[in-house]
Image (tube, rainbow, N blue to C red; front, side, top):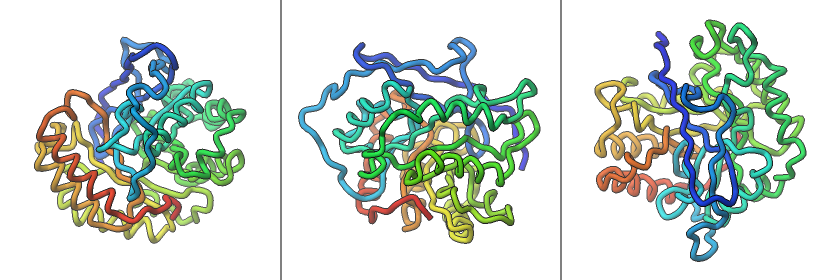
Length: 318
């Protein structure tokens, strides 16, 4: 597979000034995308400001089915269409955000390590010790109740370990991904571990995944037949005993490559992914208020949301 230069993008949004939290955004050009800061923003995490329970009329409950949403979905956007997200939160604001997400009937995959620049060595290679230090920031946050009730879908360990570009020519091996999952389990034994890597790559390792629970498959038009794609990813996930989160590259996965998916593509590709009973969540890259506010895109997402709601609820553990 040829890896091209990634396009950097980091999103920071401000709303009512009560609780600050980080929502990270991912940007990329291949079949999946990487996490990088925009040059105009600070190198550290940028807080989002959000009022707890802002705009809520009454507490909601999870509607059933599998979570449906997007990377960096604002908590205020959980509702009738979206009830799932991938988010990165500061430790001091995590509990208030989880309370708000649960009250809105949502579920979330959490990334603790944040931007990959925080855990690279001087040569741009992955540094396991630095990664552990980033994760350790959450050791004293007691979010166990949200793991038990399913509000937390899982711990997102790292983004695209297989991409040489991310790590200055030295991809992170599958054995290290398993070691990262083992470290997560040593801190939070009952929390599901997730890596943003396709099962096809994870299957290439001859070892066994005992701590890693789930892989991630994100479809783009350049992959060809969506049915062939999802069937292959499911087969590889099953072969390694892994759960599977799926989604679409909404902003750069259309045809031709690197263009936003149109409403027809969203509906057709998404329906094909949801035709499989294997995925445990449908979370797409990424939230964009401009893109998602289009009436045609909103209609397509509503259609997929309804299909996700009609699926049997399942754990992301393989």
